[in-house]
Structure formats: structure tokens, C-alpha cells
Length: 366
Image (cartoon, rainbow, N blue to C red; front, side, top):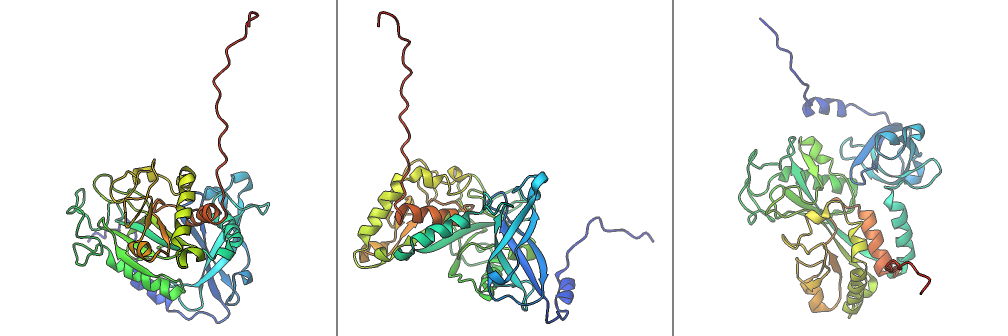
């Protein structure tokens, strides 16, 4: 009888669980270093063994990686350094093991081009007396292995948008297992996740939390896309709506400070758009709950505006504003950095020098 050899291997989580259950030495801790690669969007990770459990990032040694393989260095000078800046409990390896969020630095101790956190920390420190608060709504799309949205008919389309936003049911909430596993993992890590919901396009979801990776999807064999317009046509894109306030905005009659902030944002619209994500012009069309990328507007309870003032804020005359322009693939550090620099630090664009028409050649008669 002929024995057929499988053409490809498979990953069996049941087998993996046997090894994860093995006792781990008391003096060994697995630390998974995580960083943003040269794309400015994707994450990379590598794991090392520590001899004791760290309590603070400063207790973890800097490490390095091959930057020529991540788009962050040339092959002739490829070492890039990882500086631990935050640690979390590891929901994958459990126990005393850690996830270590890192900044990236070149050999001369300068931050890499994609290390937006470095500059963001500087802005937050300068504006600390204004007590800026952020609430970021990260939208994303679940894709199958073939790149088609998870749960959609292969090569076809589901019913039009309408029943999916905050939807319930097997044909409305596509991929809920991934979302709820991610929610619990964030709580286990100690991340202050504040909520989640199904979005307008089927297989699209949102969570409200700081920047972190949805590695949970890997466990379910699906992909997470941060493409701001993953499916062209009559479908909502994916954004990263950013809610912002200062202490003055949150106090009585803070609406005056909110209006002033909106005026400052309007004056730097193009500058903000430039750091609000790649391909955002495919999403900010003036349709599907967006404003046009070429125009700036603001309004109360208007989801088609660049800046939305929530209805409750308009009634109470204090609170926060929502910048709806950032795309789902934006770097949250770059977004929060420029918002603070524009609103709190009063940074302005340097006006371009006027271009004069070429002067006609002079003649002897002139």
C-alpha cells in the first residue's frame, strides 16, 4: 500500500500546548522584544532568555537586530539597536514571561526614521502642564489567508452595509472569536483597553487602546489588515479616529479652547494629512463617513467632518474633539505628536516663499 507524504506541514495548537505546559526554570524568563520595522506599519519580534524577571524596562538589556532585513539599515552597516521602553505580561507564553516594547536606534545613538516615539515623548513632556489626554479608536479588517475579507463569499460579496455595525449573529459579526480573545489578552497584559465593537464593513472591527499588535489573529489562522481601504467600492474604509483634550478643554466653557484648537488644526491640515497614514486618499473621499482629504471642516455630531465635536460636548460646552482624519495604518506616535505640537505648543507651518515670475532679459534701451 502506497504511503502518501503530505505536501505541506501544519501547525497543531494541541501539540504546542503540551510543550507550553512544560515546567519553566524559576531563574529563566522569556522576553519577546517587539518593534516597528522600516515600513512604519508592520511589527517584528525576537525572543531572548533573561535570568530574572524584570520589573522595569531599564532592567532589560538593549539588544540588536539585522536592520538590512527590516528596511532600517544597509547591509554594510546593518546592526540596529533595540531599547526596551515598556514591558507587559505575555499572554502567549504566560507565567513570568514578558512582551517588551522597544524603540529602535542606529549605531550612533540616533533614532531610526521609524522611531516616532522618541519625538512624541519630547512633545508630551513639553506640553505636560496642559495635561493632554488621548483616546485612539483603532479600526482593522480581518482577512483570510488568501487576502479576501474573513467570512466573505470567496470571489463574491456579502449583503450591503447596514446590519454589521455593532452587529450580532453568525452572518453579521464575522470573526468575533479573534476580537474577544484579543480583548482578554489585552486585559491580561495590563493594557488599558477600554472597548471594542464590530464596524460598518463586515469583518471590520475596532478597539480603543494604545498601539499594540493583534498577534491573536495568528492563533486563528487569519490576518489583520490596517489598509485604510481594503476593499474598493461602496464599503467603509478603516481609520484611527483620535480623540483629544487638554485640561482647559475639559473644564467649564472649554468649548472656547476646543474652537481654538480646531482653528489651529485647520491651518495645518496638509501637514497633518502627510503623517496620517499611507493611501489615506482612497479613504478620505467625502463618502462613507469621511470628509474629503482636500478640505477641512468641523461639526457637532458630524461623522462626515474632519473634526467631530460629540453632541454631548456641544451641549455641555466642554470635553474633547475627535480627529477623524488619521488612517488605520497611521503611526499613533506620529499622530499624537503632531496634534500636541499644533494645539498645545502652537507650532505653525513656515510659509513658502512666493514664486516670482521669471524676469524678462534686459536690453540696452531699458
